[in-house]
Amino acid sequence: MNRLDVRGLRGPRSILAIRRRLLELDGGALLEVIADDPALVSDLPAFCSQSGHRLVMAQEKDGRLNFLVAARETRNSSQDRPVETSYCVSAAC
Image 1 (cartoon, rainbow, N blue to C red):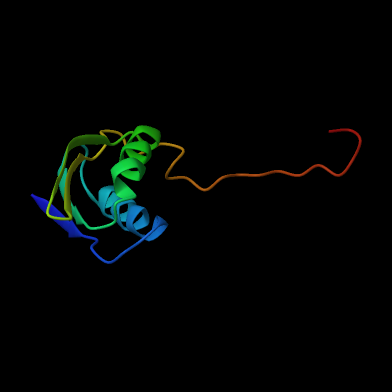
Image 2: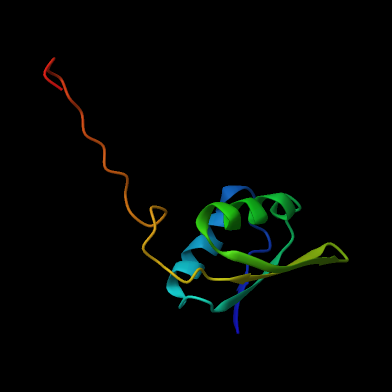
């Protein structure tokens, strides 16, 4: 099983580290996340819901948070591609 320790990271830095690691994994692979940021209790389920990953388990013991996340099966989603923006400066657009 893959393991990622994000203890000491706060705010979006922990989610970014988790996202990077999940993108390296094959679909369905499990990632164990060890954390101490209480915000992850709400942030990680929201991230998983938006990005297609699946939160399998979440538990807290003595201030240590443990999560188990399954990487999404398909890796070609809009979350992975840069946003393409086009601008029109003429009235013909």
